[in-house]
Image: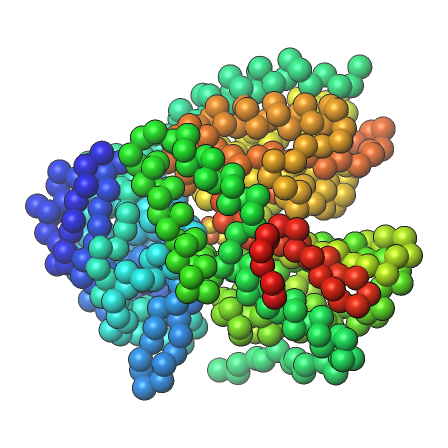
Length: 203
Length: 309
Ligand code: SF4
């Protein structure tokens, strides 16, 4: 496990040696971007109103306080299940040139291809730690597609030492969660066998 | 585009009803930023067992987050769930008739106070009410418990990534308890990984999907270190706990020494031709409270030592 500190804009070179299981802390620009925003870009061909090239997105629906006059405060923010965006992510990375995709849980083959072909990383922020994350958001600099409501708006943030982010897919297309799943399932079958010896309650 | 709105007028409650509502609104906000004592203790215990730097780092983040949430009185997780109440109420509790209104209004007010995320979407009309209440939200499960004048209720913030998506199935008796084990274990390596482990696993056994499902939720209301009164059910709890721990999901599914905070089984009788089974997975951020009132609204908080509302 190695630790990296990345600052946007991020180049291919910055992330080429980072492997699954490594830890990243992010400085710079991070935009929340989830279900409907992905759908709008990929299926409805509407250009993303925020330039995320060489920057980072976060699959998340935050709790935001509206301070008036287009000023906002991040109260709590944490990742939502990334797998819901799997369907769109390969095309999303291709079109936007985003370098870091932050979320919760693993992603699938489309994102693996995208990370490999367009040099990007998928990283996981430990979910449930929403105050810790919010305190590493220095300010909210922009809010786009507000018609989508608080959770789905594209909130562009300046972040400082945002993390820990655990690399789940690297630029080789290696996938931490898929590897773990194989091991988990093998162990599970062995455990089921052991337990089943002892639960013959119906005689 | 027409925007639909949810019609809600705050109810006119009796003086005592208002008092109970206000106490509950405060308690709901508190639950959003402070985990119950049994969960905190268990997480501290599990954190000590993990040895690798990655797992340690995740646990450190969790501990730090809870400290900050407590101090700043902010929701510790951004998914503050859809509120659920599991209640035992004496038939002579004086506010029984007002109870539904009290609970809904407490959620309405607690949501503003905390603040909680707006998590109530009206089905078919498909709009977010923007108030965190809707038709059937909060969900209220009420049992009348003799004719005492007391009430006790579990208050639960069930998140969209953990216990709202439970699973239930009715097995044939030929599948036996082996079928129950398979059903629970398969859920751990599929859904469980993304449900923010270490998990509290609630297993319900009964006669149908809905009895099993409700039992699995009641299982999550029990303390993480509790044990079933039934010897065989307790045995299954321990077997499953060890078995799931040996899978080694680790915090957040990154792999590690342990997977669960505990496994609780709640069971009721079954028809000879069915075994109903259900699993509900509570996440590490298990925001479940317990409050007991007597007829004068003196209250106790058995899961939150030292807390006053
Ligand atoms: S599973 Fe629990 S801790 Fe994780 S994001 Fe959902 S509510 Fe929060």
